[in-house]
Length: 229
Image: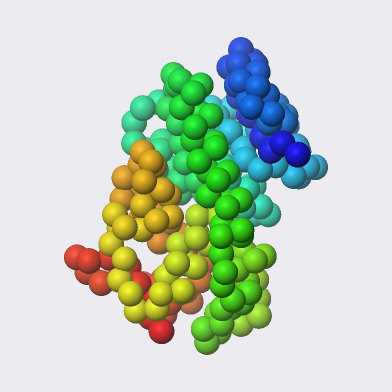
């Protein structure tokens, strides 16, 4: 069965072009043209990936992304007509997994979508790990991709879970920002190490009682990040 993609953009010609191209690769494509419609569709159905424009009527792409993250960790790729870094970092701050700047080449879009889908779908098949990892108050369900702290579920995005899982599976091993970027986002990811810093900060805000004095995700200054056993 083909992968399901939701394309959200108020420029109907762009949506039509993306839809046609993705359907050529046997993907099932749904479309939305404003933020409210996008949220409704995500709540009603399951998607393997969302292409989400930042500039939308009714609700902005950032607002849609933030609200989706309250109930889903579906991979989100932001589309932005602006080339400045602030939009890109803002997208990541709000829970996006990747971004593409307009104007874009549709072949690049398809390549990035397939790379993300390979990483997310291939993990469960390639992993031969324990079903659960327990470390004190923290419990990771690797198959269900859920995190529990003191038996209470903590909602993480796909990339936040990937970062935490890697660190917890390798306690006391320090990973540089460059290394984390390659291992979690892939060698072909066009972003820089600020992406890692953004996700580590968001992760600490969710899992640490006091993010400024972390219990789980630590910094080795000048080197990188690690999970302390």
